Length: 113
Length: 114
Image (cartoon, rainbow over all chains, first blue to last red; front, side, top):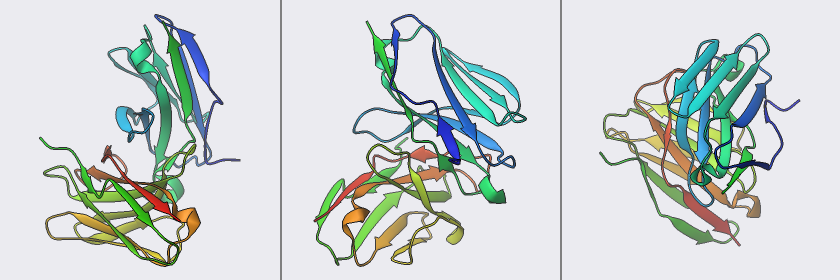
């Protein structure tokens, strides 16, 4: 089992739709969870972080965390073509270390006008 | 405020050579982490430094080393380069040490080993 696994892409949604990105992690002791957006040829850009079970909303983005299921997701409402990018799920606190952030391979999202 | 800066932007080396990559964190940030990102994969953790001390190390060979300076900037050194070291090397800074600190990435250094 991969340490951080994201739903296989690519994911394609029409403009204005909701895009749903999923991530599972293997270490139950993981403590903090991040979503990064990476445009082609660029570095990752932090868009959301979540530490507690439940939902966290920021504008069009909602992060959801369920530690019991070891599952974290990102919803993008009213998707725009500018949201087209690779979305990386990152998990910190692996193996009890505070400083060992593990990334998934990413899900490529395309928003079609 | 300036973000994380890295130099050089691109680098071409041959097998067996040595390379030094540099990173300056966001002003006020004391922690620097290094990652390697191979095409099609997520970043892989190499090192984390806080207040000049190594606080975390990923599963990389001893050819990889790093240090942090009193001004919180950092260097990543890679010796005896292999073709497989070709990747985007990312530096990320965070304000403090610990799990609950958001990390912000620099633009990266694209290393090509021939």
